[in-house]
Image 1 (cartoon, rainbow, N blue to C red):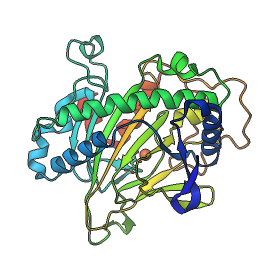
Image 2: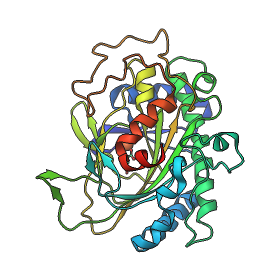
Image 3: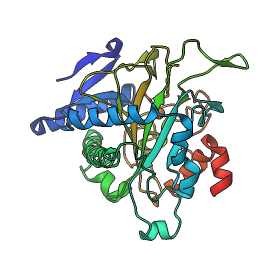
Image 4: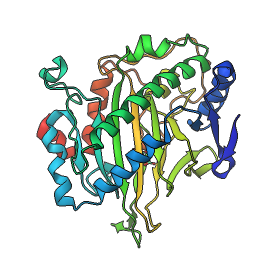
Amino acid sequence: MTDKYSDGKLPVIDISDLNREQEIAKEISTACKENGFFYIKGHGIDQSLLDSLENKSRDFFSHPEAEKMQWRMELAKQAWRGYFPLCGELTSNLPDWKEGLYLGTELDDSHPLVQKKTPLHGRNLFPDFDKEFKSTILNYIESTTKLGHRLMELIALSLQLPRDYFQSKLTLGDPLILFRLFNYPSQPEPQTKDGKPLWGVGEHTDYGLLTILYQDTIGGLEVKSRGGWINAPPVPNTFVINIGDMLDRMTGGLYRSTPHRVRLNTSGTDRLSFPLFYDPNFFVSVKPIENLEPVENQDDSATRWDNFNLHKPFEGTYGDYLLNKIGKVFPQLKDDVL
Ligand SMILES: O=C(O)CCC(=O)C(=O)O
Ligand SMILES: [Fe+2]
């Protein structure tokens, strides 16, 4: 059943009942057309795994920055993994008031793509304050990647496409998976720079297909709905799902990648969040799906955070597209490793 939470605005969709697949697909279609954001429950991922990821991450971030820098991103070179310190990432050219650990699908050095030094592919840098952190992270990535496959089937059904549409045309069984652990330290006073407010994360959309977000109980995520900014507060036993720019592009704007941001955390307790980005295969070029409902005002670049027209033809692969975007959020790393 679908309940209403979060100011009554974002739906919670139960995906557990296989006999209700068509109804679930309909609920997803409505949610994707309305806000591009929804919660899912009945996802089948054990709370004990989520608790363990949260506890071990909290422990990792509690160490002094100098210790965490043992796993800094520069060390992973073009794999783009590892720790970045507070204000180490820019969104819309402003530093975010967060620190994080970047991770992804684990590929060892003998993998052909790693041998060829393919950007965004390689080994993770696993902090070892806790010896079980690595297995917890890998279990989490595996479980949520499977959940991503399932959600993409439901999204295909929601567009009246064959259930394997995205698997056969876009992910080829090997979606690009980027996973992040974020810590938003609590701040007594909002920080300002040049008179501009700082954010946990500034307004943006996500680049890929689908984001699967687990968050702790603190809150702070905000979504730009048609009626204005609304909260996406923590809801027990759920993930927040939002669609990314590539699904907006493929659906000709029928499913919008909705801007969102994270408020500066003043709660008194650090906030943790865990976004997993389930993206197209790195080597695929992303083409619009044929014969979908046409959308008026498809080009929303005038009001988009980055003034980018997602629907302008683009010839390269998803990998080309993404590297160009990432270079803007980590300019220094781009200069050093690419
Ligand atoms: O931390 C959150 O709640 C959201 C983070 C986010 O939007 C992102 O990493 O793209
Ligand atoms: Fe995001």
